[in-house]
Length: 282
Ligand SMILES: C[S@@+](CC[C@H](N)C(=O)[O-])C[C@H]1O[C@@H](n2cnc3c(N)ncnc32)[C@H](O)[C@@H]1O
Image (cartoon, rainbow, N blue to C red; front, side, top):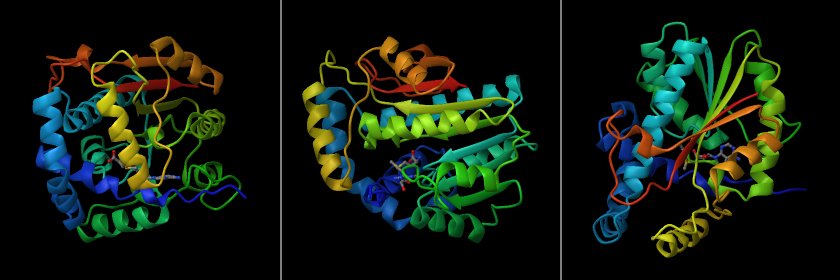
């Protein structure tokens, strides 16, 4: 049987969450001991990368988060999306922020059972859940189980609503064949809704980038620490589009941080950006 336990990745969600909190993007509900410890432990690597190499993990985390917010906000306002599922939500504050901003929105946060239980506990303690905003368990690697994508969607979602799925900080922890299996299942499942969107961040395999060697070392360290197959996917924008098309998505747009400099309040990096936000439709 295939190994579907990828819970070694979960701790990284605390780091990201603390970065958002330090930059005023999160809520007090997500102020955790784990987040603060990881954040301060990671400072030396972050400062070395930022001041010596000119790239910053924190900048990438903020760029991807704010660009995803912008793309999702447009899908709600301009395309009438009223149902969102944030898969691998970790301690993302997006569900809380968007439910406060959009009164018609239904928001389902989903993650592996351990992380989903912690998120649920933090949200309940702070009075932040209601019938529009819920948390559930999911495992993107499973098929035909209680936590498999199609079981969760069938049980939890309203198929008459225009629906948007988000993954952030998830897909590069898996090799391409594994994550493509999830993308195919997702594209197929989204076809049951009047409109189906899938928004994700993605770190491409940019061999031309001046910090490739540092990135490769970082990836090896991260793979070891999370017991996962951290991988960069696709070398060009065209390969990204073709990759998603081959998984069943009808339309793919690639958002580049540089296009948002001076447009959104995202931090600017002096070297070329390393992260992309992908907007797919079925
Ligand atoms: C790097 S964190 C990202 C969390 C959050 N989206 C963020 O940007 O901070 C990766 C998340 O993926 C979740 N995860 C790992 N394997 C998963 C799987 N097989 N199915 C669903 N979620 C998974 C982890 O529990 C963790 O919350």
